[in-house]
Length: 290
Image (cartoon, rainbow, N blue to C red; front, side):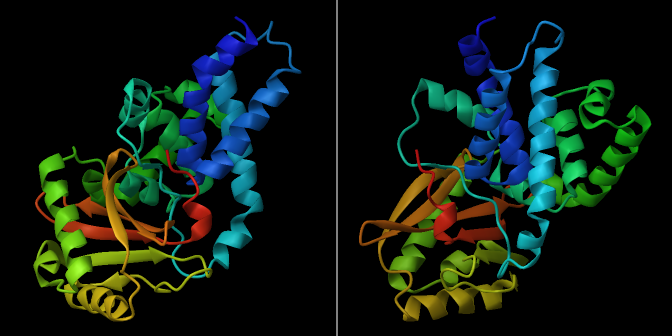
């Protein structure tokens, strides 16, 4: 197998591992690029399971990066949200394959709540389908340790995972998106707010570079007050576009031709209401639009 064939075959897989592990498209691309650069200098004649070999290298590099950047995450200003994967244009055939393999934004947020090693076990086992033997080999752990870790992960994710992995209801999400766009244009948020569950949550990520709420906002009344407050300041003026965010319908806001924020929703498990709103306005996390 030529290097070019290996690159074409396994690059999407390695990017999916790194993005789920890191929550950053930029860092994921850097990790995968480094993996393939090092692969060019490596003899593969003794490698019998190339997929597992590449997954191991990628996972370990992600773990090293997460450990080295832990302090940066700890001092991050406000909630840290993953970098959204924004699809601006109608996806072509190749893009549709990527969308089928993408991870929902809500699940990506959940994964960031796990320890790096727990995240690795979940990604290898539940997302990529590795058995515990291969996952243990990749992580340098015992099978028993990986099984116990996976049990803890399921307990941590519990109810939230069901909502984050619920099948997409495109028509309902379209209703939510259009209601939010209309509210942001008029300043009247009451109708949109009624689409939220009572104990809904709003998370905003400005990274200390643009103004954003420094803490999660809980409950319909407080969320409505937040949106109405920034509307009065003119922060919601601009051009709204429905787009695909991590394979699901979301919204981006442009002001004077510049992308200012992305907004997406997590629906309840029964797909009838919004339980979480994610707003990313950190400019460093809005660089990847396809």
